[in-house]
Image (cartoon, rainbow, N blue to C red):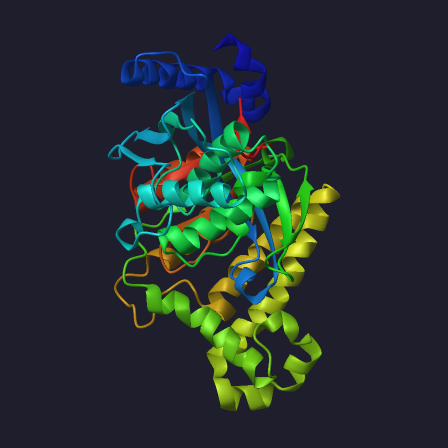
Length: 414
């Protein structure tokens, strides 16, 4: 393991020593499982959304970042056209590359489905699997259901392995992200956008413009929050995403209804001045909530760009003000915090309100990702973080506040 220490230091910073032990343990698991040494170690990071809440489906702008919580694998080649995975906490799975790699309905929503889809995507691109295959032991510290996109990290991990072993590294990071999204849509059965896979594949903080969603424009940013004096964390609200499909679906549907008023498909195609002039008619046709959600999208696109500009120029105070405004807009206009009709249980709103009270004007807090349940996101002064964590966990429960670091690297062969 000594040979990967420089990579660990670059990726994990002050956490490198602990990560060294983690990879040594992963290597030992591989030896016990397969009776030989692993050939390589790979990893791919989880991600956080920082700006651009619910803008991507309207071909808007978002700011996201990879984090040091990641999915890692010890890998060895095989020569029998088998892909075998032993993932910590999950049943073993595998596929035979000599069999059909077409979508199997019974595999949707499963690890097996993602594995088959990733192999299919590379086979379609001409990857040579003759006498190929691999076996891997996988571990992840990306909490499931945390909103950090564990599925995207897994897809980028597999894509990085297949790209290096059987495609001569010809797929660039953007193509790996597109492959991951395609697999999640087709083989896993989840209609996701491209933001999660792009953030995991590219690494670092990334400004993304989805005007052309198949070929988004991206810009990587140098962003060290800890150095700037703040700790980024997610807060698990205690509310899951179950039974919220209609709430999520209503957001793009209502934004789409506003766009349809102008004969367009998404808000990106509608000039903001035309939208503003038509607000009285839109209220009658689409309803007030749809108008408010469209207002959020237009303003959030500008905020995401302004956040990136503040990061570039090192204006952390301005950046945090923009994050705060983003959070307030999600509450007031986007309205993706409290499920319709919820009275006794408003976990996300309690999380945001208590965080704002503790922060007392310092830092920022906002809903993270889809909203309604899942996680919130806070930027806390470094010196205040221990007390913030302790007090928020009296409200939300033990281990509900998870500190994060932005990771400079995407999917990586160590």
